[in-house]
Length: 457
Image (cartoon, rainbow, N blue to C red; front, top):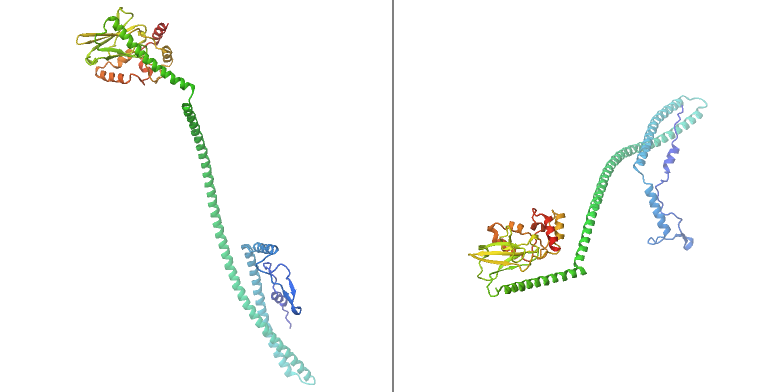
């Protein structure tokens, strides 16, 4: 009985000569340089490791890039692990078949040897020697087969040991695969987390950029407006500080006005002295006198001329208007203070004031009729057009329009009479009250205009 078994010679021969891996990096990518030395010996020329040619550098970098490209990924490890697992299962099955075959061989050889021994005892006759020789030859063959079986058993033991190592390697690969999968999952989760953080950071940066753009636009507009205001202010300041003919004319006009006012005061003084000389009262002491421009828009004030003059607060005062000298006096209602502002009705008339103190009556009068103020009609017409506007102008003796009624209406209370007199003295040259303060709402402007125009005509 003969049993056929697989021949593992080819498999063992293939395993004995492993194939060259694709990951192998050779020491050199070119043929070596040989030199012929003494006694025709072949000597390899040693290159200087410090000096590398451009070709070697390019070759080395190419090899490194190929090595990086050929590194096994997790998927390659998994595929190789599956292949190794299948090969290990195949080897395990082959080892089991070999073990069963070896047991059957031992049994068959033992039975064959026993059969030959029994056949040797039974053989007799002339062919006994030939049969004995044949049996001896068979026994020797059996012994050789047993020796081969022993070697095969040893080989099978080695295979069993290799099988155990393969199992260990399989377990190691399984553990490595699980660790690799776990690591891949962790890296994937970490990558997702980093991606989400990066997206959130990008969104925050975009929002910050948008907010910055909005703020920069708003601040740019504000800066532009502020810059325009500064430019306008600078232009205004430059125009104010830049000398011009208008400013020179204004200064000259102010100087001329001051000279004219001084000459007017001198003229009034001389005219008063002349009138006294005509009346023969040159040597008579005067206790009071009228000061102020006798024009519409200014005011007249009683000033004491002597230290012996009684206080005006203890005197009775009454203002009158006279059409001509020697004509009948016209009492001015409410004009009972030491200060009087000529009205438009006083233009072309002489003003007189009676001062009664301790039974003594003193009469003062203007040197001539009240003159109309230049430009008064224009101011009154402007007031008529813009009755709600306050004309906050610096007052001078020829530019303020005041009414006696309004002024005296303010100063009717005797408890503030002294305060009003002090204020009038302090504000003799300057008055910052609005123009509408001096013209009361009940004053009719049309008759005023008629009086002014008639006096000017």
